[in-house]
Amino acid sequence: MFSARLINHSDTLMLNICDADLLGRTLKRDNFTLKISEKCYAEKVVDKEEAKDLLRRSNNINMVGKEIISLSVNMEIGSQEGVKEIDGVPFLLVFKM
Image (tube, rainbow, N blue to C red):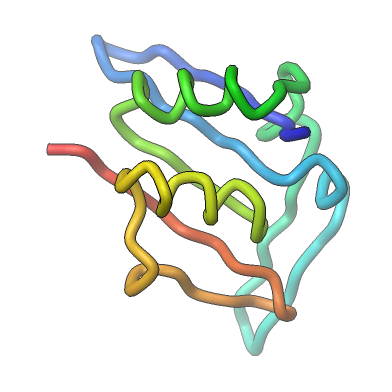
């Protein structure tokens, strides 16, 4: 399961999506902090099929977690080369052109 928030702004769909078990965590590395907050990631809980649909439709995607990133890489939406880690948790930003 995944936790997702879809934002529609000026004909652009932005998706914040994370592995559901990461919701509420704060990740830190050096001076960088990533807060996986309900405000940004918890509009709704989605299953794998709905997550695939959201990944396909979205223009900009902010992903956190092994499961969602693996799904996006398998769909050839994300690239393993772009994945970064903070506190051992992977995150990936995708901007479709």
